[in-house]
Image (cartoon, rainbow, N blue to C red; front, side, top):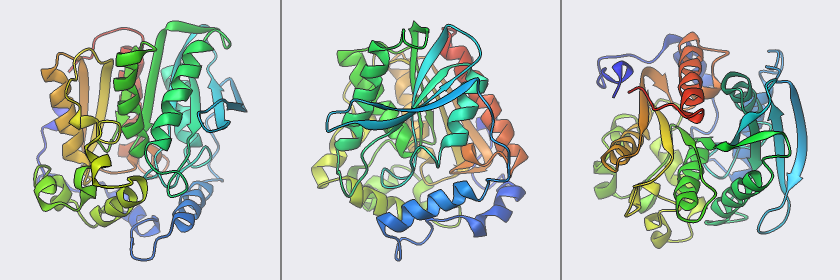
Length: 332
């Protein structure tokens, strides 16, 4: 745990800029939420920033890649340097919502600051495609990237996966699958990940393992009710929540995984499972850099235009991941 992790719950306050942004944020009332509405709301949030100039990598291009159930939409962001690492990125949105457009800025910033070719993938979403559809697509995209890494003059020794929220869930699960069956990964970036969906976030016993689920159940953008709604849409039944492909923290063996950069937010119901995974990886001998941001909430990685603290955290995390992806050991 680094110096950013020392502040305990209750000793810090939510960043003022994010507190002012809260009333404008979507997805906070699961009682009225539908999959189509969730998708519309996240897209509207992204478009509300259209007046803010987009970060500009050297090149951006849409394409399709093969998936297990048909072609997948993808977007490739190329940095100026060549050869460059390749990073497969999975967007957040509770598995149900989110797409290439909602997370376009995040992918652009990764390409620029990590100096990596970023392949952002639009995986199948529930309820149209339940678990393990999104995982299967994410793994297929990573395998495709490894097989075609020479296409953009990529460096085959530097392949990573990354994601935020539900996308980080997919990245963590893909990293486990790649350890077992390839391709070999150099690093994984997990941004406020969901890592233990056993009980669909409804089980009192499971929730008690992670105090942040109660501490931050309401009031900080992502609510526990909304996480329950997301899990109910993604998982087919109670058994799915015990599957490491849906709950990477449930994996029996974490040894041999790619080095990880994991970040959580103090005011996030998912905080403690992210921290638990960082600790579990360390116990298994995996190199980990862990960042717990004391004044931030879920979603901060895409809120840098509205909050200086969020922008600085994003820069810090991308810099740390660049170092790890290029082969250096995490510093904390």
